[in-house]
Length: 109
Image (cartoon, rainbow, N blue to C red; front, side, top):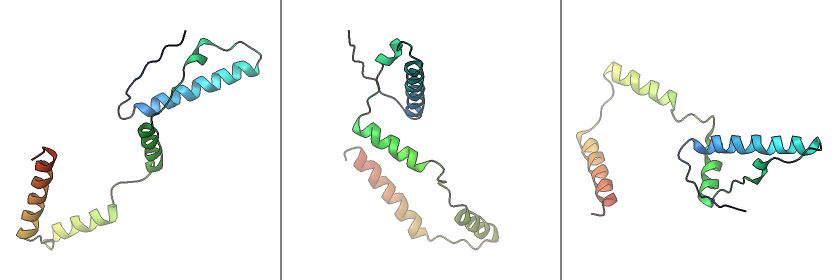
């Protein structure tokens, strides 16, 4: 009897599922290589949706990539410490207005 169950996996969960699936496949392959019976766990199958596949691929591509450009941050920190970092009032107001427009657009208004 085959039972289909759909399950949504949140952030970080795909790695654990993939690891468990890989371990299950390796264990089944070892059992078959030894001439043993396959276990009932062979009945489990993981199918990723296109979105899930794309997310897993993107996550894998981003492993080891730092999101902080430390040289830029260090330079800005030093400029602030030295009192040399200047921001115009118009730039700040423009950014605030942009963020408000984005939030309003997200609310459908």
